[in-house]
Length: 423
Image 1 (cartoon, rainbow, N blue to C red):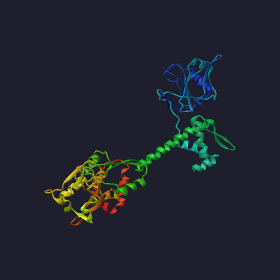
Image 2 (cartoon, rainbow, N blue to C red):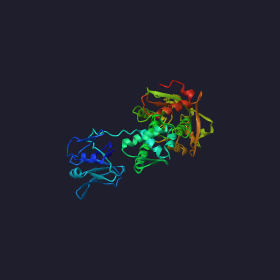
Image 3 (cartoon, helix red, strand yellow):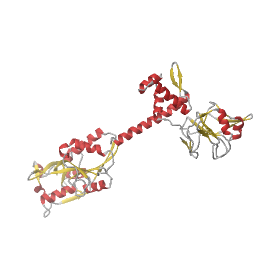
Image 4 (cartoon, rainbow, N blue to C red):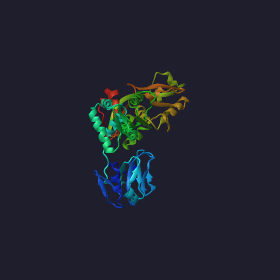
């Protein structure tokens, strides 16, 4: 434990006369007294440095003749069990000894004396003591711990011996914590609870059940498989902090390469990516039309019918993939008019509703309703036009939260994900 720049360890309980002999030492860089493997050290200014097992309001006093000189006391408010005292008059201690209301003193050492050994207290001992304090008898406590009563009794007595404190009062009517024991057990409960909580968090983190997962997307989440997958992932792993990043496919791949994101869901096959990828599902290409547009009278639209239409095009999301489709379906010799905007999808759909043009989207964008907007599938000679979606990630990504998401994708889409997953 540490108080300011001072560190100390519990060593042993010394009888009063032994403490008096120890305090006879004057300033020295070496200890002058040893008992039971422990050391009582003299202070840098000639005073004996002692630690008294006490409450915050207790005092350690040195008596000389008919006078009492109160020692300077150092105490951390957050540590109600331990008080530190520096004897300002070692000669008084030498002549008359040290008086204490409990008549027990424990030696301590600052960090400059690293040879002072600390008492080994096992985590199991703390748990046993806490459980014992909750039951009226050691037999009941042993049953709760699923150990034998003699084993528990020996463990508690060994703990008391190492601490130099009687934690429990044993009577025919049962076992009860002493005053000192209650103070010790309160601190032990806080320590055990926090340690167990840290252990649980560590296990959850290693299994990917908590932590942060950064996901890159460039399609809508208003409907479709990605929406359903993220909802299921959130249901299974509620303690994972999911952060979504929007962007064009090239930007998401760059973010992935620089480890800015953990996984990216991108339409189409990226030629720039040579690490891991997983083929997932495909989505139909849909045209978002103004409600009063003549093409809304058709059940489906063919690519050639878009040749002379004004098309809104986003520089974000799957916009680059749609440009490739237009080039392959219509040819580059007579492209349709394109109006580019650097805004997100919902703003472009709002522009469609006020007759600013036609917008190509994936079918996952049709889950939201926009005033004045009608959706129609876009076909070629073979039927609906589709774009495949893939999940991209780095093989050397050490984030434990990534693996459960990839396992969920393979679980939900086994037929598609059975295809080779390395591109």
